[in-house]
Image (cartoon, rainbow, N blue to C red; front, top):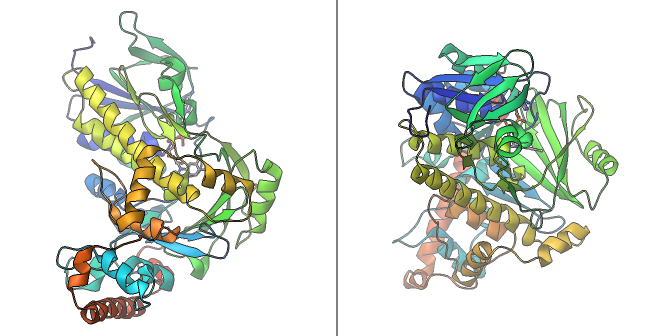
Length: 502
Ligand code: FAD
């Protein structure tokens, strides 16, 4: 193949969540005549974590035609309506980042401006009372959303928690049934073409070479192709996101405590996740190795589980940052090979998904074009930086008294892109979503208010409406949301009835 020749073969290196998501999507969406081969090594294994997602994952599954009940049963999955942040703003405090919108806009003015004015005078409850996902989270309730906009249930947005290794196995079955060829073996060498440095083939330890036109590096933190073979380089964000390790352990089933939300609890040297699945709970402590030893992190995690640990905790090392290019020559990196942001907002699997959709939209079916490759890199990098800023914000806006990490991140200088956003919101509750920014206004509102950034002013149009009328509307919204949540089944009961794990 030449740089301008058509793509006839795609080789995916790695069979973790990234590799099998890419394989499934390629099998379904890439036109006939293109072969897809995935190589993975059972001896190396996968990273073994990654269980919480955000709502767009449903579009990915829908695109593949996956049946939700079957998927939840086979991945021991549960429903996620948002994240509860405990002790992040300050010790003893908690807030929610729910999916879905707050209240209803009125006369073209965003809901949170009305809320802001009423809250000032004590006439409104906390903002979460006006977000249906937050209300359902608190009650531990769930029912699938409906399309009818007159129903409160239309306000429900949701994602999943699932066992990532079961999800990869599920997608493997899907992809193999549609012609993807799996090769077992360890890649020990990568051959580059003389004239342009494109990847020509990968060499397996015991079973020969695999040639390809387009290579997807899904090899995890190793970045076997994008870093080790192509030497693309890495941009570190460790000065902002200082946590560089996690210790993880599953614990015994949560039973009735299969909450429809992820919990993130701040600890002295980082934070702990709790992700309830049907058959177990995923737990982990993300920490900064400058501030705590692996041993102490492990002990802290074990002391804060709500069920018995099911194995020995294992430590994972990482560095926040991104590959300088995510598409270099004829190689596209997906998943951990493309970069890493800690799982505070459950964004990694989503970034795999958007990496795949961008690749399909810019698929080099007539050969490689620098214009398309540059656009892919520009879009991917912008999106990663936007997510990075959102995560940095959670750390930066803290008033915690314990833990030197928290003092450092509070005092550090943040990226200009983030500083501008926070200043604008703090001034007058205003927010602009740039390009394809993943987190919409409602997410930023939830986290900015939750972390203690209260706008100094509200939109003056709010003052044109009779405060009694605004209060009446807010009261009615709050009452309707509370009533609807009350009438819903408990989340674990709904799961047991509709999609018990198999
Ligand atoms: P891996 O799972 O590491 O897979 C790499 C693959 O490459 C494996 O199949 C391996 O066998 C293969 N391989 C490597 N080298 C070779 C070789 N030489 N030859 C052949 N094969 C090879 N994301 C979320 O969205 N939500 C979360 O809640 C979440 N939590 C996380 C918690 C932690 C602590 C960490 C570190 C990550 C978390 N993530 C989360 C990220 C998520 O785990 C990953 O994005 C996802 O699992 C994809 O990983 P991957 O497929 O890129 O890599």
